[in-house]
Image (cartoon, rainbow, N blue to C red; front, side, top):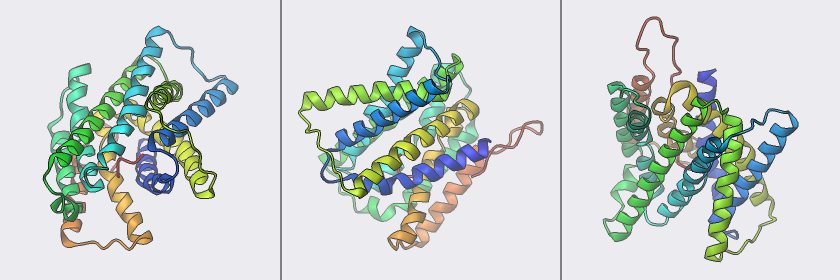
Length: 303
């Protein structure tokens, strides 16, 4: 089951960049994000209620969901979308891939989980591998005030993503299932987005074009309901640091799709980067003890 959830998350989030790309244009980015998570939340809440699987939460549970919603389904996305205005998507991917390391550090800080050296080393290999994969973009990035601003936003987005992982882990430790936790968290995140859009005067336009509507539905059902449920289930089953190595593999899947759809050409540094990413995957999921069941083997921050 872990292997299935891991591969599902990687494949889903590695392909969502196509749908996000189709949404750019008529509708403002924060409004599109609001549409995505508001619709996903309503569908999940209605479906769980109809199936009588919606858990009743106490005050602490709702606060955990509120925190996760703000971090994972609001600030995280706003930071990354804004960062791409100042720095290349490749550099954003490299910064986001550090989530494995941040999750290991935060799990230690939040829950006292020992930091496994192989996870830190594996995460470092993955980060270096992505740097090689996106080296042409990184080399062409000019050092400027805008670059620092973009890096700061990408780092803040990664920290928000990691904090959302910790809050999801806390939810599951408190007995809140990923489906109920995600449904309420997406609802709270979308409400905060709505408030932000209203305060900033964002026009609530909608693009009825089949490409936009199709992309929105894909992001709602596959990118949000399926993708986030699979990933946060992994956070509960594998721990935040191991689950977060998905963030290193998203860009690899995205480049593989781009190879077919857009004619991306693999260079020697890119192949070397892919090898480092795979090596990092092996280190992160290496079996530590003979009595332990095998863990799964093995990106853009689009999601």
